[in-house]
Length: 318
Picture 1 (cartoon, rainbow, N blue to C red):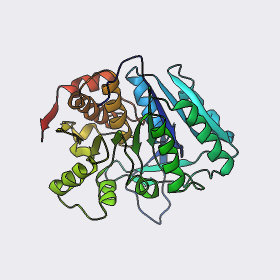
Picture 2: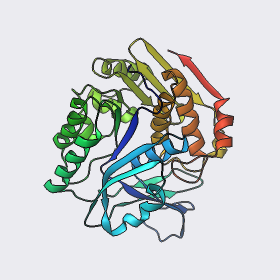
Picture 3: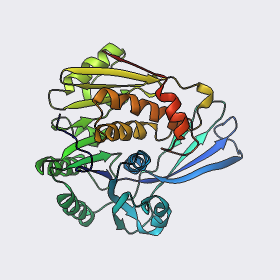
């Protein structure tokens, strides 16, 4: 693994399909009926945006880029005006999508995802040119989230290839067509969840043993696999090492699970940036993800809860 030197590397997050995340509490959600809901949260988001937000909470500076709709870019200013985030987003005509989570306090959350703002050939050229400037041997480039309408898996792969060719360490956390396009890429970190790992494998993976075997196969071309298992924690696998960790969060503390996977990735990267080992970074990552679940806001946590959870992480080598 290439040495990570604090202060001499930079982390660039790429959010090609950002969103405004809105959480509405609906008591005993019933499909097909008129019901009263209460909006409890409306914040700028998207997976890469969440990664930048979480990195800053760990005092790790970041540059954030991707596409934003000019009509509601103002909604992102409270986050992007943070001096530790370098705002390099490309403005496009129209509005950034708004995703909705219907949260039933007594049941399972329902997530409604808008497709996003469509990009054209000019926008694709702009992001290629920008990444051509940002990607260097001293840069970690994090592609996080889905691709927008107008972008193909081939387009996404071309952006990844551009950054790899520049010598950057490339991290990918994506899904669907964009994930399929990563099958032959030599990445630094790939961060799938259980469903995404099965898609990469081309078959169902019903047992944890089969999932880990599939993750290890990825190490033929990926330096590390950060495998997320939701409330069951996460695994980090690399050439010659593998660890799993789980934070013991009281289920009654859970407030909002949106963005927990992004916090997991951000805290792992932040841990490496702070010169922690992959195993130590994993402990920080699962604790931060759990602390985020205990906070009503997306990709946010109370430091006191994080500190407590760090003492309650079960970690072992596998």
